[in-house]
Length: 81
Image 1: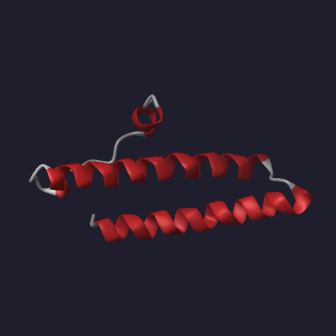
Image 2 (image 1 turned 180 degrees about the vertical axis):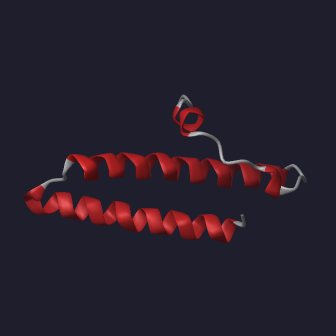
């Protein structure tokens, strides 16, 4: 997967996330399913950003960025700030 493919996916997810936030902001709120989807989008975005960071790190180290792997949600969400 190329960086451009990852960025396109991030843009798609971000558009959906924005739509859900706009919907919630009009006073009608979100259904349980929509809240679950919003949470899933956030996790998926975190995974994408992690993958992009891995790819850049590999480039910076003179390695092939295609060796970066999409980590599990559990791994990415378990990072400490």
